[in-house]
Length: 167
Image (cartoon, rainbow, N blue to C red; front, side):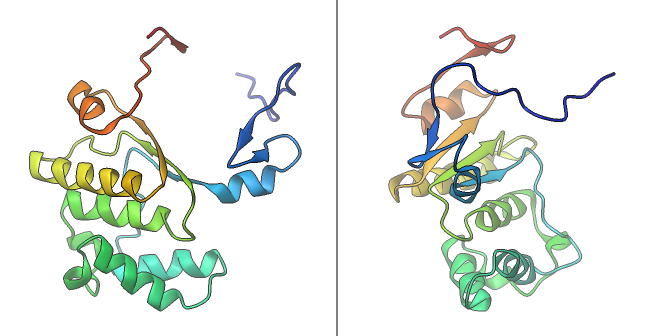
């Protein structure tokens, strides 16, 4: 199996993310985007607060402790902030994961199937978080296999089949 090590250069057109050209300003594009994958990427050995502080430090932000405390409050995790993430429920882990991806206030966040494997209550908690993000001005690109989720959360919906948008 041969793996492409570089992306092919576009032969036409331009793409901008948050006003930045992806070809000539890739660092600015990367700073504008955050991703939350299908499975929560929290460090279970660390506490919720420590996970947030770590990401803030990695992004070289000032006052990582305050950033962590503000996000714990925003995502209703303050009471659990000092507990190891391994003790969190699925919904709490997902909220922590989303909180981690918001450090630095990215204007665009990709959520890849954020409710996969969650119980109904945890799904509702994540839905509320997504709604609050969108209402706060964050652009959210959500991938989901659940049509009810898309209907609840999306302003626009595209349906993919074999790598092509069909609707």
